Image (cartoon, rainbow, N blue to C red; front, side, top):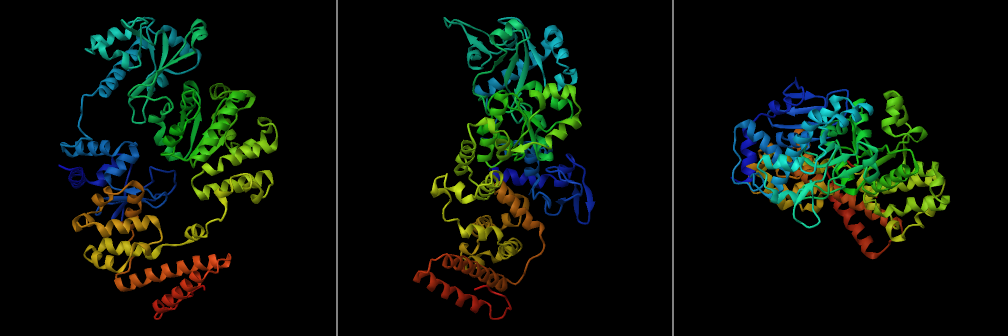
Length: 575
C-alpha cells in the first residue's frame, strides 16, 4: 500500500472531531466546531473544525490542515509518527512503508541502550544516590521536578552501567559506539564514562533520550570536570538539541515566546516557578541548528544568560545569529550579575516578569552597553555586518531602520558601510507585491476546488503567470496538473499532498464559501488585475528614469488590454 493510499485510508477511518477533541475541548457552532486555538494564545475561540470536510482552520494564527497535520503540529512529531498514531487508533496496520518499518539497526540499538541507561540512573538516585539527593536538596530542586525530568545518579563504579546492560542482554561489542563508555588505552576493554555524578538526561524534541550530562557532586570532582557530557554519537550531535524542549514545546508555541538559559539548573528553576516556556542551550553557544529548531515553535527568543561579561557576550553573539535567521531576539539581564537560578530563589515570579518587560533588542542592547566595543563606530559596524545575512528582505529593511533610529544615523549612510550590491536598486516589484491583494487569484482557486471538471478548460485559458502570488501560483499549477479528480474532491487527502505552508493556504480556501460561479467573469477579472499590476510596476520603472522604447511599447499594449477587458466594468485605473 502506498503512503498516499495509507493516509487516505486512515483519514477515512477516523473523525477529525474525535481526534482533536481528545487534545482540546471543542464546542458545537452551527455546522462546525470551535475552540480556543491550541497553537497560539487567544481569549476568544477562532479555531474551527469542519466535520463535513474533515479539516480545521484557525482564523487567528491561520494554522490549518487535516487530522494528521493536527497531531503532527500539536505533538511536534513527524508526519509518519502522526500517521502511525492515528492508524493505531483506527486499528490499521501500516505495511510496506520503508518510513514506518521498525528495523533493528545499530541506531535503534543505541536508542534502546540510552533508555536502559536512563532507567538505571533513575533507580540509582533512589537507592544509592545519597550524595546526589543531598545536592538537589541544597540547590532546592524538588523531588517532583527531579522525577519529571528523569534526573538520576551514576554509581561510583567503573562497571556499574556496563554490568547492568550486560544483564539486559546488550552485547558489549556495541559499547564503544554508544558514548557511554571510554575505551582503555590498550584498547582491551571499556569502562563507564559517568561515575558518581548527578545525571541529567537530554531528550530529543520527540522525547527520546539521546545524551547525558553528569554534574560533579564534590569539590575534588569539580577540579577535574564540573560536567562530563556525552560525545557525538549516531543519535546525538552537540549543538542540535535543547534541554527541556520535549516538555516545554507546547507552552512555547502557545505563549509565542521562549526564555533561553545556559544551564540545566537555571532551566529547572524557571520550570519549577511556573515559567514553562523555556529551554536550556546545554552550556554551549546557541547554534544555528538550535535556533532553527526553536523557530518551529516561536520566533520570539528571550536570551536569559548570566549577567557577567562572558554571559553578556554570549547573549550578543546568540542574538546576532538569531537576527540573521529571521528571529526576533531580546536580551534580558538580571541585576547584580545573578543567574536565573539565584535570582528566582530570592525574588518573586512577578519580579522576574517585570524584568522581562525590559528585555531589549540586539540594536538597543548594543547601544546601551557601549563598553562592549571600543567605540560607537565599531558597534554600528558590527550591527551592519550582519545585514546581508538576513534573508527576509522586509526583516532586513526593518532592521536597518532600527539601527538608523537608535543611533540617529541616516539609512543612506548606514548602507554605505555594507556591500553596495546588497541594497542598491530597492525592488519596486517586491514593494508592490507586499501591498497587493490577491482576491481574484483566490476566487479562481476556490472555483477550481468546487468545480474540478472545469480545471482543464481553465488551464487552457490561463497561463500560471497570471497568478502574481507565488504561493497561489504554486497551488494553481498543482491543481492544473493533477489528473485525479477524486483527489481534488477529497479535502483532507488533498491537503496531505502539499507541504505545510501550501496545505495551510489550501485549507483556508476550503473554509471560505465566498466565490464566483461565473468562470468567464473570473478569468476576465484575473487577467485584468494582472495587467493592472504589470502597468503599476512599469509606471514605477518609468518614473525612476527607465524610458526605453521597449517599456513605452509595453505600456501601450497593457493600456489597450485593460481598456478591452474593462468595457463592461466601471473601474478606476491608475495610469
